[in-house]
Amino acid sequence: MQLLDGRETAEQIRKELAEAVQERKKAGKKIPHLAAILVGNDGGSLTYVGAKVKACDQIGFESTLIRYDDSVPEEILLAKVKSLNEDKSIDGFIVQLPLPAHIDELKITQAIDPKKDVDGFHPVNLGNMVLNLPGFLPATPAGIVELLKRNNIVTEGKKCVIIGRSNIVGTPLSIMLGRNSNPGNCTVTLAHSRTQNLKEICQTADILIAAIGQPDFVTADMVKEGAVIIDVGTTRVEDKSRARGWRLKGDVNFDEVAQKCSFITPVPGGVGPMTIASLMINTLKAMELKGK
Image 1 (spheres, one colour):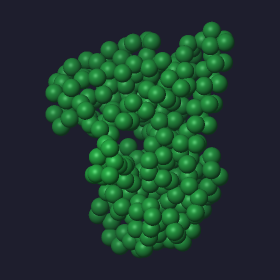
Image 2: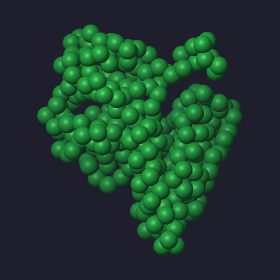
Image 3: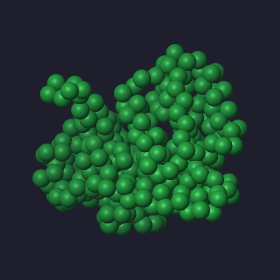
Image 4: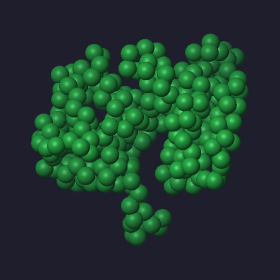
């Protein structure tokens, strides 16, 4: 078993982006500027937004963090999205999900200018992805594909099973891995809560991707010998042995499954860093598309 180290791979990408920023500085060109809107105090969101701001600092991007409490009215959030759309100094921005229940996430997502939608969630960007047209790819699926590519994982002709059909991870990833590309050319099964015989389906997978948010859901008896395992899950579970009182758990029972697989992503340190790296790639791309 070998670890698919997302931290190490993301560090390589950050170095490449930092070099690109230095080249832009030498040429007197604009430095990419990423903005993030954070609503409320969700622990996972705080962690991820903090990591995104830190990545900007390491690469040399400018960054702006905009915070609201979880009672912010939807119209205030929409007004801020409109303001960022019109702000020429901002190359790309994200609205960190999830949002409080009183805010319509789809309405907020659709309000973002597709040319600044570096999370890749806008319907225009998702449509471009389906048609394999230029646009921003969703950050987590793009990060997974890049992780496979940079670690020379063969995908062509392989059977890939994805557990979870969200618009953020599972559905776009199924399209990306089914494309005639490298990585790609997989035969993809998109499984979900209504899938029958899930265990047997997972046992056929050369590449098994778990993205359902249920800790330890994938166990050794669901995994084919020698499979590649990608664990997208990051759930906080209680752990009184740690000072902070919790730890992150993936959707895969790592200790069990590691005994059978060829490659596996750790949690934390697997898909998460690659998601942030993809966001940084999209931010640089957003600025370059403006010709600046």
